[in-house]
Amino acid sequence: MTAGVGSDFVGFVSDQPIQILTVTLDFPEPTPDAVIDNLTFGQKRAGNEPPKPLLLTFDGTGRAAAFDSVALTAEPFEVSTPPTRNLAADGRTRVTLLVAGLKLDPASDTPFVTARAVDAQQRTYDLPVESNGGAKNLTWLAQVTVRLPAELSGAGEVAVSVTVRGAESNKVTLRVN
Image (tube, rainbow, N blue to C red; front, side, top):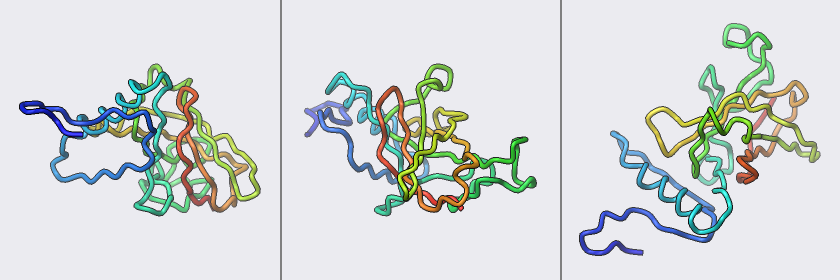
């Protein structure tokens, strides 16, 4: 698709969900509003379904682009966090998942955002969503922070997905020790 002469069009409209999205950021940040917001709104206009959230992964691995919300470290994650690195009284680890393809408003979307993990034995674990919203200075990126439940201890590789207003994301892999 090309833009007409004199047009400042950036984006496209598709009736197909986004399968793979590779974003390369230069410094300073390019104009991701134009790129991702058009993808999101294009999905909305193409059908009556809400846009499908896209959990980000490391390039070609299927491993979640996620981090410990306090220590800012990547996987593997422990269910319990040492007291020196924990801001919560319950001692549980919070993991932040990075999501593209939609905007999350903490005030109105919180009740409609859920997350779950499935282990190798096909057991399903609800991951309580503790916060969601946009990433600071990156309007095209959202983040969902979940608490790892005690039952997930030692689960190993789990497939994680997020559901927003009934639309389920892709599944990404992360390791829980």
